[in-house]
Length: 218
Image (cartoon, rainbow, N blue to C red; front, side, top):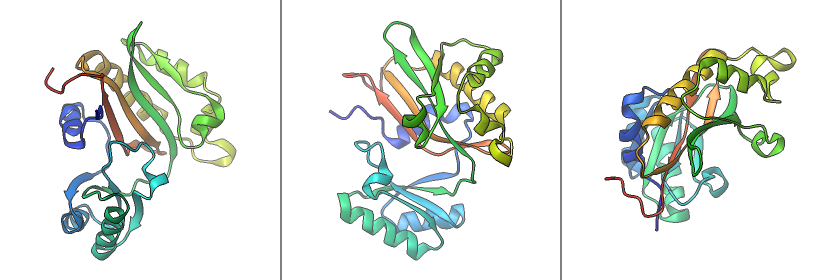
């Protein structure tokens, strides 16, 4: 049984929360994806929608920096050949920054909690994520960030630009509010990656999991 909420339902669930997602359009087939890319503006990223795969790039289901409609069509056809997938997400390319993870998980003892930490290869390398149980204050988020071993990367490590910690704190506060209003059939909401820039941040991908036997209509 597939316990992953489809993209359009996920988008609808979060539409009222004004989260900082990069421009994203879902498309059925290569031609529709090419039109979506033209509407967003090049270059774009194209991803195949596959709820069964968490690391799409490992399966050849992500194509980056596509600079024209023909390149978008070719990428879609290639992904369709790999897994027979016909639905795609077309996104603007995110600016450079620090990859982080953020999300909500429903703990059987404490209820919904907000999880955040470094993303990319640092997830496994540092084991540096933190959890907060909502409701929490901005002070609590700042404390959690200060406890992370990876905090220097946010502060401008080795001459790098300091990144927008306040934007990250504001987004985590929103996730705290979202966690408290999350429908009971949702077991987790995963934003990975969240890219923190020197000004603002970008949410790039989304995965919402349902509780076993749960229904979107609950």
